[in-house]
Amino acid sequence: MNPQDIIYQPVPVKSFVIVGKDKISSAEQYLIGLLLTYKHLYAFIDKQLMMKSQIVRDLAVELQKIGCPMRAVEATEEAKTMDSVLDMCSWLMEKGADRDAVLVAIGGGITTDMVGFAAGIYKRGVRYVNVPSTLLAQVDAALGGKSGVNFEKYKNMLGVIRQPSITFIWPSLLTTLPRRDFLSGAAEMLKTFMIEDNGNYQKTADLFFDMSSEYSMEVLMNGKDEKKTWAGIMKKHMDTLCELIGAAANVKAGVVSRDPLEKEERRKLNLGHTFAHAIETLAQRDGGERFSNHDGASEIKGVTHGEAVAMGLVMAARLADRYFRKDKNDPTELEAKVSSDLWDADIPCYCPYTVEEMAETMKKDKKAEGGKIHFVLPKAVGDVKIVDLTVEEVIRLLK
Image (tube, rainbow, N blue to C red):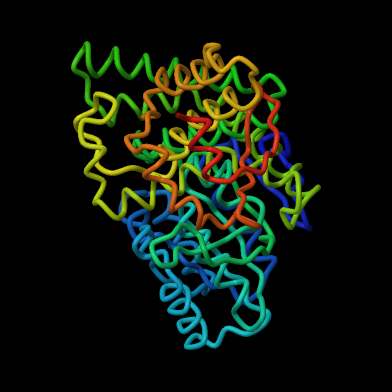
C-alpha cells in the first residue's frame, strides 16, 4: 500500500484516525495487519451489517483466519442497554478474555458505544478498536472516547469516557449504507462544521445538495432504481466525501484533545443534542407516530438519531437567534439558513413536538447542572457559545 493512499490524523489520548481512500481489498488487509499488532482480539459485529455488507463478511473471514472470536450485536436503540453491555462482558469471561484483551467494534454508533462501554468496565478497563460503518459514527459517534447506553428510556444516561486505541475510518463501508442512514450522518457533519467551519460547512452543504438533486432527478424524474442510483452517486462523490469526513474527524479530534473530560470546550459538540435527545425519547414513548408524513415524506417511520440532531440544530439556531438578538422581531436568519441547508439535503428537520412537550425530558438531560442546562447556541456558522439556561427560560424565548 502506498503511504499517500492513507490519511493519518492524530486524535486524542494516544488514539488516531485512519481514513482509507484506496481499494477495498488493500484497506481490508491493512486493517488486519494493524489488528495483528495486538494480541487477544475479540470482535463484536453489528448483526444486520454482517448480513448486508459483503465487505464486512470478507473482513469477518479474515478475522476468523487469525483466530479472533466474534460475536454478533443487536444494534438497536432498544437493545442499547446496560443488560446488553453486561452480556458482552459475560461472553468475554466465557472466552477467557484477560486484561490484555483488545475489543474490536465493527458497526455504527450503537455498536461502538456499547463496545466502548464494555471496554471501559470489563476488568477495570481494556483496550478497544473502532471500525465505524456509518457516516454518523465515522464523523462523530466512534470518535472521542465517550460511550453510553440508554437507561429508563433516556438517551445515553449511563456511560464512560475511555479513548479507543484506534478508530479506523473506512469510507468504502458507506457504499452499502441505506440513504436514510447516510443522511443521518450528514446532519452530524453539518453540526460539526457549524462548530468549527474552516470553510467546510458550505462545501458539505453543497455536496449534500448535489447528491440529493442527482438522486431526485434519476429516481423521481427518470424512474431509476433507488439502490443502484444511490450507489452510483456515492461512488461519484467518494473523493470529496473522504476529504470532508477527514476534516470533520479532525475538528472533533482537536476539540476532544483540548478538553477530553468535557469540562468546557467539548460541550460544544453537544450542539442540537439536548433537543435531539428529548425528541428521540418522546418518539420512543409514542411509537414515532408524529413522524408519519413528516416533512412531506410518507415513508418516514419514527426518527433516527441524525434526523433528531437535524431538528435539534434548527431549534438551537432559533433559540440562539432569540437569545442574542435585541429585537426579538428580527427574522431568524441562522434558523432559515440551517433549515434550508438540511431541507435541500433531504434531511427532515422540523420537529413535530412543542418545546413544552420536551420540557420534562430536557430537565433530565445529562448536561443539566444546578437546574440549568449547558445549551450550545450558534451565533453564526463557525461561532457557537455555551449558555446556561433553565428549561423555563428556553420555553419563554421560543414562544
